[in-house]
Image (cartoon, rainbow, N blue to C red):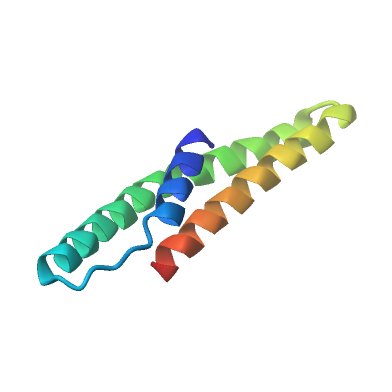
Length: 88
């Protein structure tokens, strides 16, 4: 969640697009690197979701809402950063 939050902030504040070809090339390169990095995080995201769902199935009933909330927050943050990356 910390990594997602930090990178979401970076995507939010770095919206400037330059007119200089060198700056545009640099921005494209940085964006491609970020998308690669995001792709490397996908297996970890999937693993956390699977583990969380298994925990929800085996935990005491009073813990289910807490785990559900945590998984929802993770999913929402992941979807937000993926969406912002695509928009970029």
